[in-house]
Amino acid sequence: MTFSICAHEAYETPDGESHHRFGVAVTTRLPGVGALCPFVSDRGAVATQSLINVELGERGLAYLEDGLAIDDALEALLNADEGAPQRQLHGVDREETFAFTGAECVEHSGHLEHDNFTVAGNMLTGEDVLEAAAANYAANAVHETTDPATGPEAVRDDAETDPLAKRLIDALAAGNLEGGDKREELSVQSAAVVVETTEHHDWEPAYDDLRIDASETPIADLRETYDLAMAGYESTLERYSDAFAADSLESVEDEGP
Image 1 (cartoon, rainbow, N blue to C red):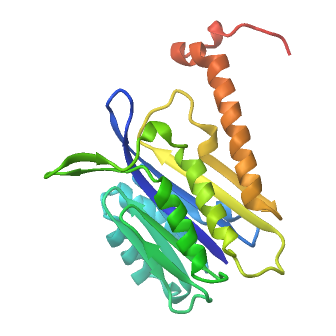
Image 2: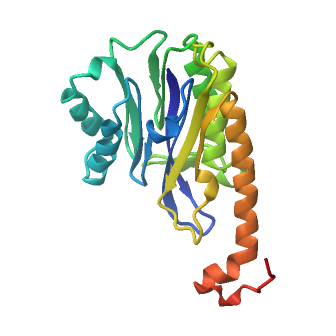
Image 3: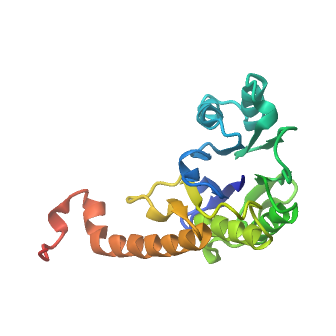
């Protein structure tokens, strides 16, 4: 009843600082998926779906915080879960990926694992949904790896790319164009995107945590909400940059109601 993507990107800021960011984007033909499926921190990203078990996402992040690798953390949770055959669970940390599709998930179900991202879905029109989402993200991914033989190698110039949240929404849209969730009789749908980073911001980007809880066009609405959130974020920084720097509202000119 869902398809989603989890991604990890290592990147460098213009001042030379190295950082990591993680994100999940998800859509389904049910309301409120953003409250149930995506779990993200500055240590990793997890998506729990099919017969959703929210505890798998919550405890998965907690295990990552404790220092476990993503595969060890999620495998341990599934081993203790009697409902595992009906679950889908996938995610990424700074080093590894993990993806699981239980044998009792409804067709078409499956997952794809790449070096720095995973895609999974169930109740889909076909495997093309996952392939299209993966291809779209891969074509626009930003990830820097260090190889002792070649040194740092950037796939793309991060300064020329859209924020991860937008690129994850685009990946959902690509999968949806291939058919998405096959249950056309269910018109009320939802979508969400969540991104976390190790980079500090004076004002956390509003476009990194967005949900459309009930809509007949959730991905289009999520894109529109992203655009509005980005515009609002930029306006906020322009209006209040001095206040953020001073950590005080005294520098904000009172312009009335």
